[in-house]
Length: 55
Image (tube, rainbow, N blue to C red; front, top):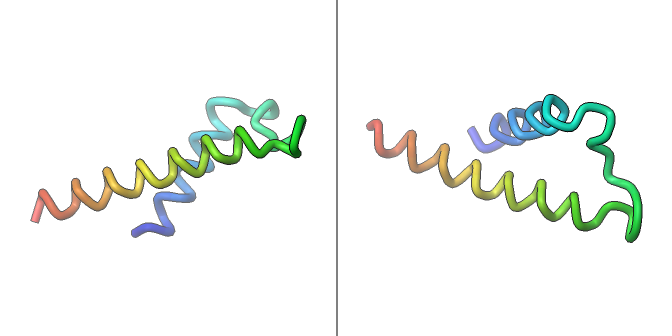
């Protein structure tokens, strides 16, 4: 389940940002990568809580 959420977030990133969603720039894109990582963690927690709530 957690692996699936990563693919969902990466596809959402591609959908929203398109070609502009690259990890580059100052510090080789550390800031956008951190934002995506935090989004992954939050999305995983939401999915886990939603699944456990529906059981």
